[in-house]
Length: 417
Image (cartoon, rainbow, N blue to C red; front, top):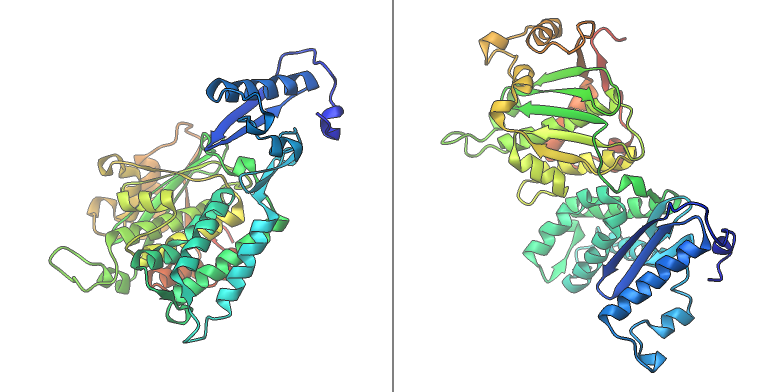
């Protein structure tokens, strides 16, 4: 087996605690193992070879054997703590993965070349080249899940299939390519922890609702503790006037789903302040709006530029916090009263009307008391600067990556200084 890390293991183990994972991708057989002895590694390796030969019988001529002799000579079949598979570098010790250095360097070079043409009216990108490179980026983002949230402008271009792509005509696309390049470059210094790639039982749960009147929601801890929190925000007049309605205001620039997506972004930003989010934290978000659930699960919007900007902002925040992929689920509207109350507490529903946050707190504690009588809900108020950034996205303004990555004060619970 020849590898120093393998040779450092004892020949045999006392227990039988072998953990392993086997997978097949097209014609590549992949094996990972958490072994305590060389014997266990040989057992997994022999099982893989036996499995290959069960499907593809061995050949008397080794050069024609289904197990590639060429790859075996290159020691691609050896066990190792650091291994390149399918274009990714896996580190079994640090438990990380990142795009292979050669592939990442290629993508960074191409993106830099494209961005140099941003102000040129004559230098465009051939569609075939653009399509090929975006496909490679999409593959690379398998180890940076939040990166998918930057690809919507690229998807829009591919859907239209122009002969050439000109960046000077498309600020959204140029900004997205610049953000993609930054994320790929940073991945060199900060490879993705494998725990950031898989969902799990949620540590925290957030649920929200948005309407033409406002947005509201609540946050609770599940596997981890957090302060039970409810929040709300009333939309300003200009937002209400821009919402398209059936047979009314068909020229409006916003849909109810856009407001729902803005509400979910606000929910996430509140959770950043209320919850202890870090590498591999599992978060479940609930919404009664199907488009919002779809946009967040795919981290992409097909038809709404407003939602595109909001999803991009969420994706950048997910990358900063290094959480695991979100579990975003739909909740039926008639089961969502706990968020109906704060989102409609501005007068549209007289029985829930609260003139200030103190009245909301009293109402919420009376309607939805916590299991422990000694516990109480708290009201969170997002800061004006955070609200302003969400408004900018609703106006389809393209904020820079740094603005979303280095946020101002998020807000605070009422009574906090």
